[in-house]
Image (cartoon, rainbow, N blue to C red):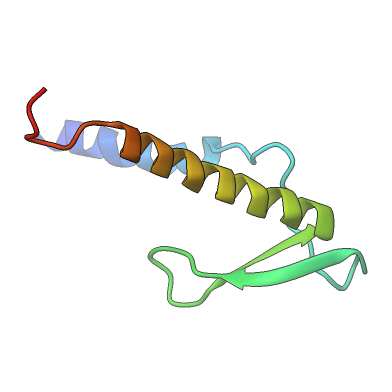
Length: 87
């Protein structure tokens, strides 16, 4: 019984090392590059907010992607039949 638990614990411990950094994202300090705009954002499960730095163009694309995703979700929700409405 202990062997599977130990194997699972070892797998979880090693899996964190295998995580790969996402393409296009890097850890940066806004002081290094004057074009960078940094914002503090809430991180689920953390007490203190995280810091994200992007250029103004990247922030604009990020916000547009969020708006597009929200619009698409609302559009799909409104075009689907109501639950229990029969059909």
